[in-house]
Image 1 (cartoon, one colour):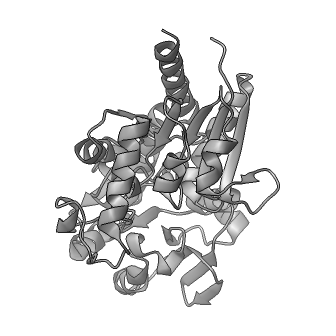
Image 2 (tube, rainbow, N blue to C red):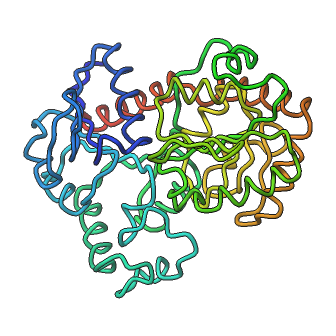
Length: 366
């Protein structure tokens, strides 16, 4: 089947998950000789075009297919697109059907259509949510979610079918040896090593960044040999055996994950985390709250440990359990690697989107 050009769009170039998925899809499409384009609302490099949300529809060629990953203004972006165009929206969070929040958590106002004033201080949340829903009804985009959890929410609030295509990343052909990774990073072979990682580091609200230091202190008290890395903020420092790193590139993060024993991921809300996939691809088991799409990635007691959302005591107990058991670390890490390789490779994700694009074109041409 001959594909038209596919124009991908994301809000900020630094919006890690959405932008990385778009780039991986574009790389896969280009290998299949499909013409692609990538635009941002704030481009920081030279390989992307900067386009305001209200200009996307004018920029999109008549015969092209538009694939939107995120935007800072859904009503403006969708409103700029003429009806009857071929549009796909991948939902990387809940923003398309809320009054502004990426994740509503337990906000009761979501079920009531959002409220003004918004209890979480998003301005004009009720009107903005109505505007989003109106544009979705008018444009009728094809909706995709990486997780079944978000797909269920989106179907409820957008009243449309939502396809599920899990996120994927390039999977190494074999795990990088832990001993070699530790040697490169200067980590003692017998140390116990835990990692916190999130964009924003200790300021990452949805990832409980403000709780990382407290969790670390408790764990260090029980495991004196523990070394911990907190990754993703804007500074670099060392507080005893707590090493704080700023945002680092994928190569360095993968090296750290290969050297570590566990990823500590006390997330309050998540769709289909690429950080978890990175850990799995590095043979690294994960301890996490069982929120959002996380249980679709981590199999409890097989590839990691899941605890009830917000139960910090259970989270700490799970972390101590796995850090104190080298056999568990190894077994769960190997299972995480092998199961993730089957379920969450970028090739599998790209194939899923190629099938979706084909169905859209067949329907459009019939």
